[in-house]
Length: 269
Image (cartoon, rainbow, N blue to C red):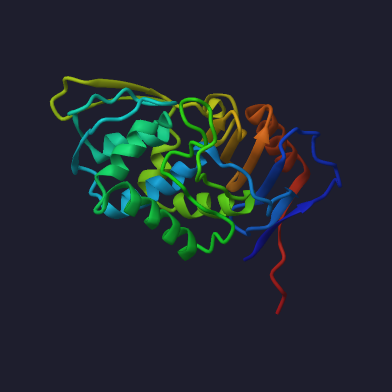
């Protein structure tokens, strides 16, 4: 059977500030609403979905990595230079608290280092047919500590982020981690403890939320990729350049479920 979402009310979508939006049914890949979904925007930390995928294909979860010097710029999990920590716990830092230092440690320990890691991110983007996406780094940062634009920065589209998230959620480790509101992890010795809190406020406020990834920089604005499942149906939303990513995602989700019914449109024989 092929179930497709049908708008049975012809209700208009809520008024929102996001510059780019896509609301898509997970199973059918039907877009319920789209706005500038193919235009390039700064992705901020939503790039960490790809950072996680590259790390998951390269490392074993119990593999131990050593923390080199990190600059501590932006969101981090307060890793300490010389600390030894598992890939599993670094991924928690990356996906739960959106830690830039975790992203850098995963990239620096990759064969060939950070440059090779980012090259693999872009190669994988091509493999997944993310034709309007480019990754400049594993963090999603677009400015330096002086708030000056980096010479090279990432870009993507709402459509590519939907496809990336749908692919990433097929990985059970990724799917489990992005749905965790908070967790405490340690280094291998137990000496260093890292309390991680998920920035995604919808995990505790919007029924059926299963993740996926937040993002914010001054230049990118508020970004959010979200998965909500209700009554056996899943909807992925992307908002980029929003002034209220959680409130606007909530409005879009409630509109989608309130105004759509899933119908079997398989041809009769």
